[in-house]
Image 1 (spheres, rainbow, N blue to C red):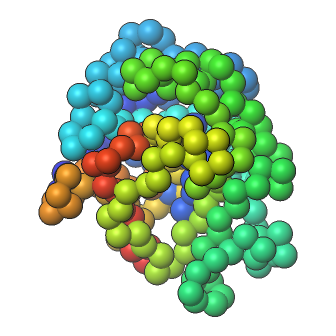
Image 2: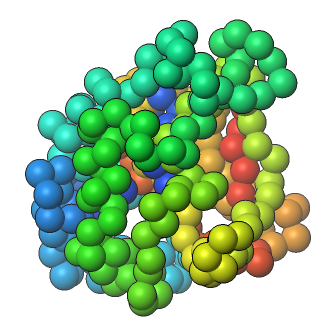
Length: 231
């Protein structure tokens, strides 16, 4: 597979595997403190990458948020071993192998509620539309299939497809949005998001979950993706 270890171009699924390639820090989407609007030229370059990508539309963006905002997200990440953390843990194993998955925005820590507000802004949705070419995005306040995540040691996901339609609103799910918050991440620790070809015989791209990296990809009938084992 193409390992994509070079920095992804610069540029928010709230996702975390609690992991910096040196991406350019100049531009950010949004209108709040965490980010400023991306220049049209930069947005056009990201759109070209996304819409022309193989095996399905995607783009990896490094240095996505301002350092001070991303630092607040890291500092505010739920602490393991607390009742607030444990109630959102799931998995077959007990103890540290359990994975954290919180899809209830009312319980998000303050910094993540701020991120939630940023992602719901019309400016941010317009930013995604300009990159992807897909218009009229709707923010899902229920976070169905999304939320804050922590994948613990031993966690992995085989190549798979995500659901296409929201079970309650019946809206068409069009996009996956992953933001990584790992302050440190080594290649040998795994946890890479992998993008596979249509017949699931070849991993075409593999992106490590490094700090302040965003991976955006289309949700469709061929967008097979998985996560390598966290070690």
